[in-house]
Length: 312
Image (cartoon, rainbow, N blue to C red; front, side):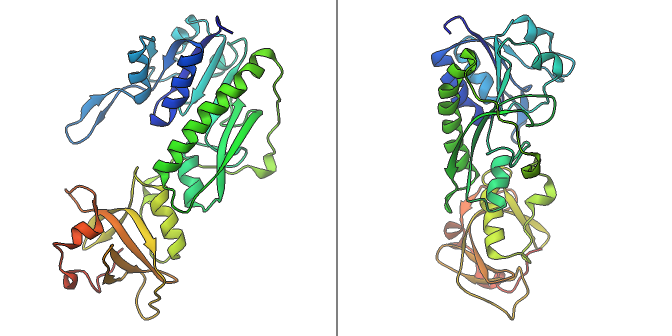
């Protein structure tokens, strides 16, 4: 397998451990990533995390804007196998049919659950107690191919998008390296996905970021941690958008208050009434400010300016 030529396709931080594992053990002849994007208030053109690793190791990088029509340079690398992990575009059939050993995807869910681009977000938001990594063959439909191997992990109540993503990316690296030899030898399993068990995790849209305090405290807690740190949940107070990055579920109940009412300042945060109780906002970001712990913000805040106001 020393002469095996691999093309890797990926974009975000999540893809990096998987790529690094391949570079350490195999011959990665090219890397395909999304085009550089302008980032931050100053709109600085920034390379993707995967591109940064590729350049560090002097590996050829391709960044097609539309891979459906801009794929010839990929084929010219003559890959024996293509491995994708959170690349971000639909791969055309011309690429899928090319490599001798096929196109393999490292997907961050236990397929057929949570097909799509936001499986880690949705696993937390929807209250799953476990998720995992699936190594699969790719086909023209989204995350529809045969399963080769999978490995699960518990979703802890303390997990947020960041912690779960980091854990899954390491699992993805380890599982891929464990699985690749059987793929090359032709000794791997090919398990058809059960279409009756399919669920989807489409990319997060703006409406899913806004907190509805008419939901239960648990639903809100899951939403906040499933969106933290990116893109971040938010709520509207006094016509201002406040980003909320962490919270705790309180044991208090306020049946006489409208849902979304600011109830009390605590040492660790700001209490807000919900459908079935109260949630405490423990980190937040006001317009034009940095994200801070609520306890830090409260040092300079007046309780009377908040109590009784209602989040929208």
